[in-house]
Amino acid sequence: MKPMKITVALADAIVLSALSAGLLQAANPVMPGADPHAVAVGDTVWIYPTWSDRRLERFFAFSSTNLTTWQRHGPVLDFEDVAWIRDDGQERHHAWAPAALEKNGTWFFYYSVGPQNPTPSRIGVAMGAGPQGPFRDSGKPLLTGGSGFEAIDPMVFTDPQTGKSFLYAGGSAGAKLRVFELNPDMISFAREIAVETPQQFTEGAFMHCRQGRYYLSYSHGGWQHASYSVHYATADGPVGPWRYRGAILVSDATRKGPGHHSFLRRPGTEDWLIVYHRWENQSGDGPYRGRRQICIDRIEYGPDGLIRPIVMTGD
Image (cartoon, rainbow, N blue to C red; front, top):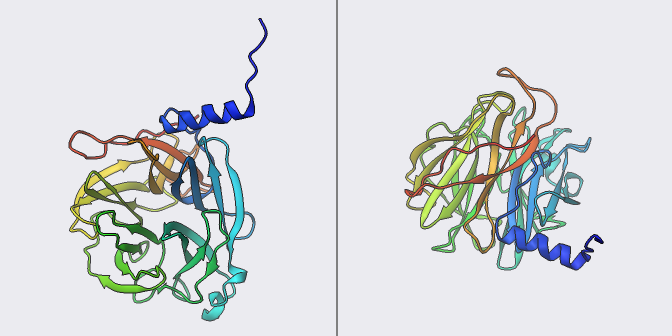
C-alpha cells in the first residue's frame, strides 16, 4: 500500500481545523523566555515575551498557528530607537514584560523599562500597523515609578461592555497595583482609578472577562523561587472591588516558579489557555539560575465560573 500524500494546503487546513476545534496541545516548553503576553489574531497566536538574545534592550514577537512551531519577528522595538530611554542618565536599561492590544485598527505595544534603581522604572507605549510590528514609540514615557511604586508589568484591557480601555501596572518590591483609564488615543491617561491591591499580589497583573465575570490574575512570590505562583480574584467590573479566590498555578516536583502569565481564548471557541513561564528540571526552593521557559496549558472553569487548579504538562 502506497503512503498517502498530503499536500501543503491540506496539511495547513488540518492544522487550522484542529486549532479551531481546540484539539492541539502545546509541547511544553514551547520556547525560552519570560513574562509572555499572548494574543489571538484569527487562527494565529502571538506571544510577546521578555526575551534575551545577548542584548537586553529590545523586544521580539513570536507567532504560531499550531502552538508548536513558532516564527520569530523583529526586533519589534529596540531601545536604540526610543529617544527618551536615557533621559534618566543611566547607561544600562532592561526591556521587560511587554503587552500588546489592537484598538480601532492600530496596534499598541506597552513595555517596561527597568530596572527600578538607581532611577525609577518607566512604562512606554509604541504603535504599529499589525501584531508583527515594528512599533514606533509615542515619544515619551506613559508612566514613571517613584515613591515606592515600580512602574513595571503593563497590561491593557478593553472592557467588552463599555469599550473603555484600562492599564494595570506595578508590583515587585512595592507590590502595589495601580489602574488607569486610557484616553481614546491609547497613549495617555484619562484618569487614575483608586483600587485596592488584591491579596497575595506581587506583580504581573492580567485581566480577562468570561461570561460577564472579570478575572484579575497575578503573580505572587519571588521570581527565582518555588514560591512564585499565580493567584486570582474576581469582580463584577474591570476595576473591582476584588474578591480573592486563591492560587491556581503552583510549583510541582520539578517545574518551579510558574507565573507572569496571560490568558488566551481561542477564537470561536470556549477553550481557554494560560501562557506563562517556569523553571524546568529544578529542585529545592531556589534561587534558580539559567533561562526560564514559556509554556502553555489548558484552563478549566467550574460550573460556578471559578478557575480550577491548573495542571502543568510537558516532558
